Amino acid sequence: MNASAPEFDRTASRTTWTRRSLLRAAWRSGAVAALTPCGSMRLVAQSPTKPRIAGIATVYYPNSHAELILGRLLQGYSLDGQGEFPKLQLASLYLDQFPDNDTGRAAANRRSVPIYPDVATALTAGGERLNVDGVMLVAEHGKYPESDTGQFVFPKRRLFAEIVKVCERSGRAVPVFIDKHLADNWQDAKWIYDEARRFQMPLMAGSTLPLLWRQPARDVRRDAALREILSLSYHRLDSYGIHALEMMQALAERRRGGETGIRQVQTLRGAEVWRAIEQRRIDPQLLERALATYKNRPVPRTPKLQELIADPSLMLIEYRDGLRASVLSLGTQYIDWTAAWRYADDSLDSAVFWTQELRPFSHFGLLVRELESFFQNGKPIWPVERTLLTTGALDALLISRRDGGRVVETPQLAIAYHCGWNWREPPPPAPDRPLDGP
Image (tube, rainbow, N blue to C red; front, side, top):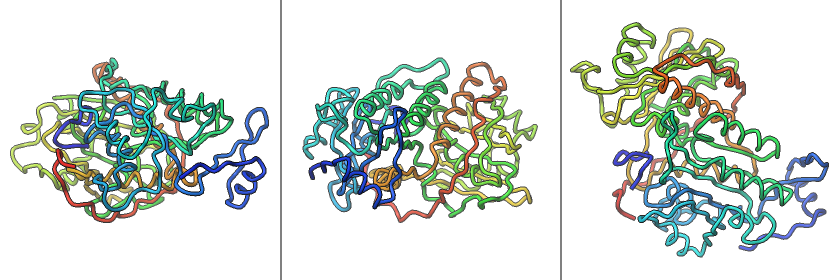
């Protein structure tokens, strides 16, 4: 999330295992053996040193998601070649496009990381079998079309399908992380989710926002009864809306009874937003609390909000258990991520979810630190169902916007899950550096 430019356009050798030694190592480490449909053993074998990661990305240039995630494996957490490096090794790289400002080739060359012409050879190093311990799929940015609902159609399903083919041919699966939402539409997202389940592939996805610094340091009390959540967002509803939904869902899933899924959604624009606020379709006290929590660019007390925001959008969400949630997008003038929530006992709480909008964008480092654990033990930090739900919600919300703000029923989003993940306050970010610097 770069404040200076929209997110959609930001300028050791491998161990050889025998079947016997693999089973012995898995038993000692507590790994669980999985049976394929034909009954053969399939285990995710982890490297005794740093897990070897294949990076699959659409583009790689300064301040792109590929640089801010995969680049940390090449340049360290501070993105300058100094200090601490992740406990992961970037073994190979595939880039779908090479724009004029590409820096992926030079960055990979400096670390002797090969760039391959297709996904399959990036995963196999040109051989027949899988030659990595995990995959990071970062399909964000690049020149791709928009769907009729206004989402960029990044080739996540195509790239994931190529990963699955290699895993099937190799007879084993490795952990895969997908940056942000699973896909730009529900059908592709559900297909990716189902393929991962079919092949018993550890799958993790999502935004950096649940991990962010929170000011004040607040979270929804676990197993508390919640009545309503309101989130403030900005910029495009697709690229930035998914972040707001992930922030909101990380709060909502902690409520009493766990996640139950979403019953219906609606998206309003312009004058309809102010009318909905006047009709109290969102809690006015929550809106006041969220606005008062702003940090980077505080919202003036006067004039009225209607006079400050030219084209607002309001995403309304009704959960199956009665919880209400909303995301109010305030264009590009006010750029904080903020959430406020009301408990069933009428008490309120709120927090700003703070991002570092200068290099080295330390919030991406928070994500990579969590991915270290994921690729080392194959256990997702949070359930992928969170992002399956937010992906489906965003698709339905953008359908509502396309169709003039109609209510969209979402029986496909009856996704119930429990999440044991707990937010913890991160260490301070690295010092700010210019966007055009190293």
